[in-house]
Image (tube, rainbow, N blue to C red; front, side, top):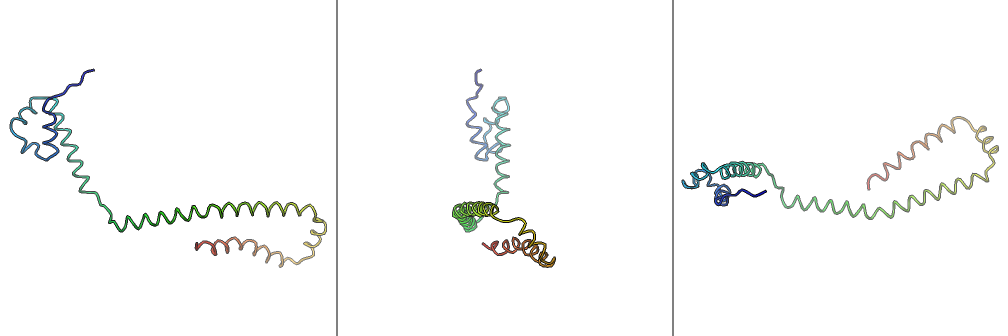
Length: 148
């Protein structure tokens, strides 16, 4: 497939880009555009793109350099905290697994009958208080450590 081109395409593009089209483009270029199908389409499309570009430039709001710098500093700090907390999270996970393993290992040595007799001998209020403590401990820990 061969390309169809006109010799005056660059002149038309220059006129449109510089804002001279069609008022200050020159009579010979306007006459050529009205007779050449390629150049007339090129001028129309280029003018549409130029108008769209001009409208986009009017609507754009560039933030101040201080704001951009501040946001990049915040992002860098968040990233540094995230990277620094990775080993801590890993150690916490390993410690939790060890605690669960030790607890399950100790269950083998516990006399279930003695534990159930002890539990039945305690008053109901003691178990309710213990249940409230167990239920509220994670919430209290969340509020203590959420300020980080």
